[in-house]
Each structure stands twice: as structure tokens, then as C-alpha cells.
Figure (tube, rainbow, N blue to C red):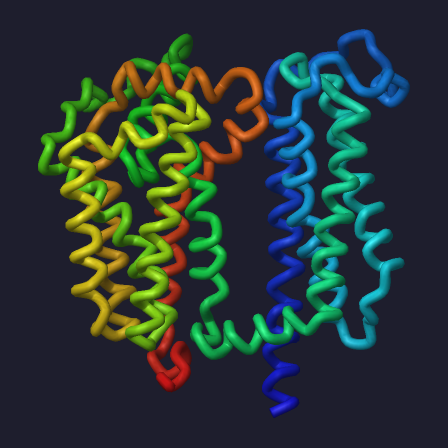
Length: 384
């Protein structure tokens, strides 16, 4: 009924604002990474505004990514306003949102003048503003065409009412995969780097002698364990989707989407790092192929389970996955891969995608614990 539809739309409004704020925080993170070596360089913060256009160092990649990077912000801000009672979809609203994006971009460019590794650009500011406006325009257009209302009804039909957290994590999963991992789908491998960071931080202090002697070189994973990690890495997002979807056919469709997106984004990451000719090299490893097949089998076996059982399995599988991955070291080959991302055009995405890759499984643990703390009747709508 109309009341039910209005409830769904209001739910989307409450979801759009936090997502917009979170995305703005991600923009700040990506714009100011690596947050070190701050210093005044003897240049006025507004000097870049008067630089000639176009700058000599710009590329087509820079243009596309600056527009695409701010478009989701414009979309989410506009969506939040459109869902407010009494707000009409007007072009003036999209221009106001574009102004908000311009102010955020301008602030980031001003701050980048104090970071030697970043270069402020008036072209970046213009492209970011254009991206924000295009995202706002898209939301306005979808609202006028009724697409957002149909999406709201589809979401209410497919997912449980408390699916907000899992859906956000599922949407972030491809971005987390984009950062190179030591093992395909091996998100959350942080122990080795965490230990190295702690050791480096206290190296010149008395606390260095207090470090546990267990910080010894880690042993490489066996090939069978690598295959298990690949399988679990693909199984986790499937179980996350199953925990908020009751219909078996819809679960199967989402599992297929997880596999297609996971394989595609992993190939894209390799193509961005080593070139298009190397996009599918990772599939040549036997543990990866075995892991893909095992992950598909696990996804099929979990189809008839209840949402609560899937959440419990997700909790167990995530703990096992993280435990296995963090018992293994990263290879020199992987270290060289990270160097490619730390330099050049990948610098602006390095910190953001790295943290997503590190933290995604731990965020899953938090979400699934909240899921298991709820009553079964509070989580699922009846299956059609």
C-alpha cells in the first residue's frame, strides 16, 4: 500500500545520508593520503587556482577518475534530499549539490598544497564539481522517471528490512578486491604488516625489547590451504547475501553475481597493475582454480539453509579465513606489486582501497554478530 511504500522510501532516505557522509569521508581519505610529511612549501594555498588550463601533466585517466570519484557523492546527497518530505526534484537542487561537491573539492585541493606527494589542480576541482553535478543529475532523472521508487520496491521484495549493513558491505566488496591481494580474494591479511608497523614504531624506544618473541618469519601456505582460502574468500560474500535473502532462486542469482564480479574485479586489478595481457594470469594457478570450484560448491550447498544458519556459518568461515591468511607471509613478488600501486596514478586509491581490503572481513564480523543478536522474526520477510 501507499503507507508501506512511504516507509520503504523513508528507509532509503535514512540510508542515503549516512552513506553520503561516509563517502565524503572516503574522498577526504583518498585526497590526503598518505597523511605524512605535512609542511609549508612557500606557495600560497590558492596559487593553483590561477594555473593555466589544461595542466601539462593531465591524462584521460585523470579526467575520468576525477569525474567518477565525485559522482556517487552527488547521487547520494541528492537522493537524501529527494527522500525528505516536501522536497521536489528540481534542477536547482542538483546545482546546490554540485556546489557542495565544489566546496569539498576546493578544500581538498587547498590542503594538498601542504603535502609534497600531492599536486593541487584547478582542473581536478572543475572535474570533481562536474562529477558531483552529474551524479546529482542522475538521481534527479531517476526520480523523475520513477526508477528509484521501483528500486525501493524491488529491494523490499528481495531483501530483509535489516539488510542495510550487509548491502553496504556487498557494494564495498568489489572496491576492496581492487587492491592487490597476496592471494585472490584474500582480504584481511594484516598481521604481518601490523607487526612490522609496531616494530618500526617502537624501534628506537625501550618498548622494542618488550615485543613478544613470537614475531618470527611466517611460513608460506600449503597449496591445499591456498585453495581453501580462495574458496572461503568467495564464500563469505555469498553467505553475507544469503543472511538477508530467503528465496533460494534469488540467492542463486546473487551467488552468480558474486562470482562474476569477484573474478572480473580481480582480473581488472591485475590489468591495472601489470597490463591487460596479464589480466587472467592468476587463473593459471591450480590452487586458484580448485578454490573457485570449491567456492561454487560451498555456495550451492548453503542455498537451502536458513538466514540465521548462514549468518552463523559466515561468522565461522570469516574467522577461519582470517586465521589461515594471517599465518602466511606476503611474497617479494607481492611487495613489488604494492610498489606499483604506491606510485604514480594509483597513489590516490592506494590508501583507500588498501584499508577496504584490510578491514572488510572485520566489518563482516561486526555485522554478522549484530545479525545473530537479533530475533529471527525481526529479520526476514516471508518468502514469496
